[in-house]
Image (cartoon, rainbow, N blue to C red; front, top):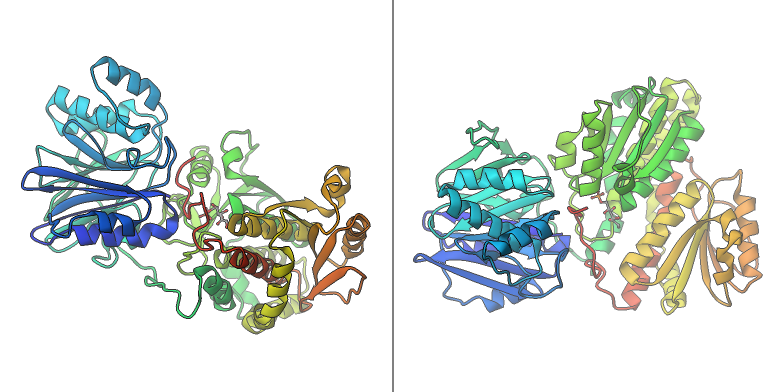
Length: 599
Ligand code: F6R
């Protein structure tokens, strides 16, 4: 989604720093880019519809400045075009903005009544107008920013230049991440730490309703009343900063292969012997576990639901964060709310978390990006060790989430003495061997490529399964549609005949997994129902199933705590090879963003 970079320096030309930062944020998804800088007292703005590379080509080679702000835009208000791209300038104010100004229409009318005219459809231009209006009215930037924060509803990370003060960048923050990097006679601003890591590892995190003034040698951060705050200077602790594709054609493929190590790395502290499971938080006091997340992270929660309920005898509900935040969730002290997020910045998940925190109930999180907004807001966080995930379609982060939730469920079952120690030791042994177990599944490329050839020209594909296999069907279907643009739907296998089976016609592909021995036969019956209507079926299973008209992808028989990690891989790779055959932009699918920081 949108990205922000800013820099102010003593003598360095900051334009390459800005472009470099924007390139680092490119994988998050965007549709236009722009930057603004001040040179000899003049404000210069360059914007393009398209890629950062296009912006780079658009900027004159002689451009040189010690202060500038830059942005990649993922359209929310207004079409994808140059006018709507950031930065937006109104009067003396120029800003780039991440987030959404919810009351922008009301503010726009008020500003128009006062004589302001706007060129774009963007809510950000209104924010610039409002800041300009208050700045002129109070002749004081602190008062203008404080008033702005009182009047604006919505989310914003704003980076601002003022014509009157060509040595300072101003920042304002609410509900959208923003950090200030501290360098040597050079300071930086970014929406995400990786954008500035090439230049500094030290940074301050802005909290909601804080604002700041940054010059080349000074960083001052204020609360909403204008009091100067003493903030902690953080040092980035993450690893895997430089991520290139290596030998792989796409990040997605690289990340799928990396699952051989990322799963193991994530669960490593908890699997060497049975007592290691006690390092995980003790959940025995909770009567119910709620899991709240979006998209793929929510699907990881759905696989865990099965494990918590079946093996740890604990009720588990899974919610989409975007729904959860607006409903009655019947919380009490016996409920633990678990939030899952790769990026740690998803706006809906963060808002749902804040809702639980406001009511003072317990929270636990599973997050990949250290020090992210969600990680910071949680009572307790368990980190997945997936490393940086660049491809928009989540793969290695998902399996790390599933693996961590699995050991959490196992730890709960162990504490409650619901599984024999001998059985737990066997499961832990399987976790320790995960790399070897996954290798043959990852290497079966020919099978996935052949299936891709059979399905890539289809317009509708179905995924079915029961219990944990239904959760996997949802993830398999999402992977296919997001990167190959083929319409697909996931259904509980038994539900298809209640309406959707009318869509099955000759050669409609139907994928299923049957990895739960108690109900596999039922899933096979459902496949037969669709075969009878002409469907072409593909089945991932650990059983010896041989059926006419069903192409079987066999996986190793392992415990239910491990099995989803195996089952999902054929789904990921079939989606990958299908998208490749279709010539899709696999790592950056259309309309999608890696980090969804708006509601
Ligand atoms: C799909 C995908 C998304 C994310 C969702 C939540 O492949 O990646 O569905 O899972 O946007 O993102 P995080 O996990 O960053 O909160």
